[in-house]
Amino acid sequence: MKTVIWDFNGTIIDDVQLCLDIENRMLRERNMHAGYTLQQYRDLFCFPVIDYYKKIGYDFSSGETYEHVSVEFNEAYDQGFSSCGLVDGFEEKLAESRSRGYQNVILSASQQGRLNEQCRQLGISGSFQEIIGISDLLAAGKIERARRWFHQFGVRPEDCIYIGDTVHDMETAQALGIDRYTLVACGHQSLQVLQKAADQVVSSLREVQL
View 1 (cartoon, rainbow, N blue to C red):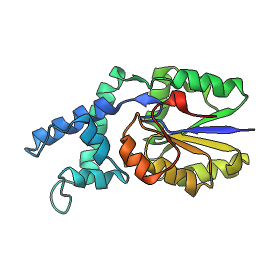
View 2: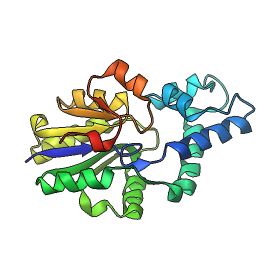
View 3: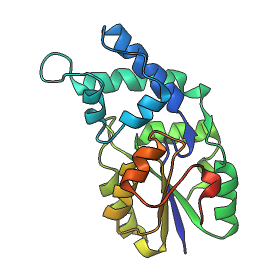
């Protein structure tokens, strides 16, 4: 059976503007440079997320920790989550995948409990055979979680299609042995950033070939 592996943030949930608004507010509250535009955010954002924070001026060598900043961001994100909708084209592409008899799986760097609740709020939980998150709020470790799931259910990388919105999604696909991946430039990284790193890049979910 074919398996479509979906990233969540920026691929399924259209949360980029919310993230940008939170980041700019947090920077202003710390009297740091703020006012980043959507294009600037998409050009700067990267994994691991701690490196992105350093790019925009955070210094974790003394005083405030990355963990503290992450908790503050996630609390604000949870408060604003209801303002987010689904990425354009997601429902149609998911329906196409299901009509082909593929199983669909979410693989995310979001904490498992939060991810489950967010999918429930969006009304999409029942559309996925598995929802795979991570064990903490620090956006790391999803590759190992996916490997364990592959082994548990006998999923073969050659039977998978991976859809994401960041270079890290390509790296995750490659780490899992998945050759068929598509990066969609409607999420957290810009078309220019994605095209520098990958050759399987499209502008919208509607362009993804299953």
